[in-house]
Image (cartoon, rainbow, N blue to C red; front, side, top):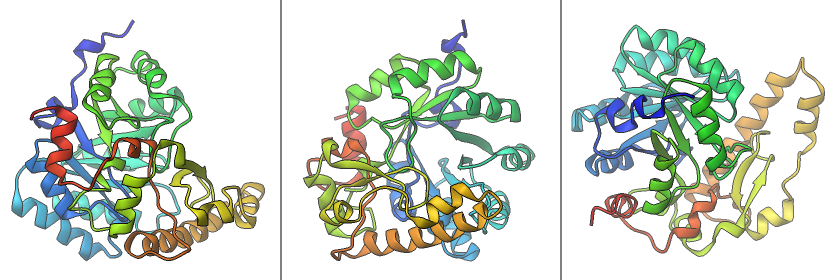
Amino acid sequence: MKEISKKKKLNELLDIEYPIIMAPMFLISNVDMVKAALDSGITGCIPALNYRTIPELRKAIQEIKAYTDKPFGINIIVNKSNVLYKRQLQACIEEGIDFFITSLGSPAEVIRRSKEKGIQVYCDVIDVAMAKKCEGLGADAIIAVNAEAGGHLGKIPGHELIPLLNEAVNIPVISAGGVALHQQLQERLAIGAAGVSVGSIFIASEEAPVSQDYKQACVDYGASDIVVTTKLSGTPCTVINTPYVQSIGTKRNFLEKLMHKNKRLKKYIKMIISFRAMGALRKAAFSTTYKTVWSAGPTIEHVDRIKPIKEIVDQLTQTK
């Protein structure tokens, strides 16, 4: 039996007040949100792909570092669909971020290069096999992406996945998905989570750069309105079941079917799908039309109004 109590908690790994990551959300997470998160006693992480160019990514990192010395991270997609991967990695290492969250591929290079600079690496995983592989490569922690996560999700419920991974590896297990309330945070910690990664409830924050309609949708819709689609990136992803989503369906399209049948063309087709998905999500995030697709997770069930990030963190931690 693994000694869970001896594993470091997230707040010990990063020297923060509360063991919470404001999760990296594609097109949503930005500098202002991370600043607010850091001021509230938690940490934050931004997807590198939220910046179209490497100079823009560097500028964002530099702005946060000029504002505070508190730790923050960058999420990096490590598969071949991310054509900027190598340059993003180099820029983040040179700018001296505190941690990476790796997603959708092998984190081997990120871990190897980060260790040289003292940068921590947390790896998204959805099962034991992935967790063991990441531990073997030298990851500092794993992020257990469970079936309640928003965006790209896992297949195993959090209450099952966390104990399963804790038994399998000797590094901290951070839970991603299904946390919006203080009680849910405490439940995750009680079953062995080193901390939690929380995303969807921060979409409806005053600091989020997305449209008011997107934020209000997170207030108006609930857990029963979340559906899983493969139409965006070819990988299962949760979205709000708007009338438009209902009209186009959620099953594989021609390109996705071709990608899964033809391994030789897979990486190129995935790049096309990802490029198209990024464009669709970018348009939906910042403007509203009939053809709107909003990504969110079932925790929007607990979003009652648009509020500052500090108030959302207070709700999670019950500090007030």
